[in-house]
Length: 205
Image: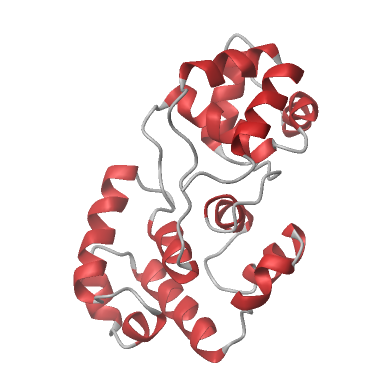
């Protein structure tokens, strides 16, 4: 399902930034696809930290087989050894267990998130072990479909901006913010298209 704002955002970005407009025109038939389950989105993000997309998918498939379906209850019931057997590091196994406990205890307020600000959701997610700002920003983009998230620490975004806007030259976080001024209030959409400029196959979190 395409986010309701997608076509409006594409038109606005193309008008405000010719470089972005060119990237958007290269990918006319694909769009951000939401992931509907909050726990699975966060669990996928934890699994995918610091490993390749291919490796993350392999680990996720083993986890999905061990905890079918992947719910807080099913993951919380798995022993650390079982999680390690799925290919998770000891630390990631701990993180998934902690994530499951937060969901089961109600210490994350999933039902309130749609009405909360981006920063309020991030603040709540940062209380869970293993979830840093990048993971929380991926959640905002891929699960809550927030339109104006700029994950400045994302390596893919940094590389894409260097290639598209800087002829490969390095760029600081403040420089990324300057480039991204033209994208407001659609920085999530711009980020997604910049990811596509490096890899046409959409990644999912």
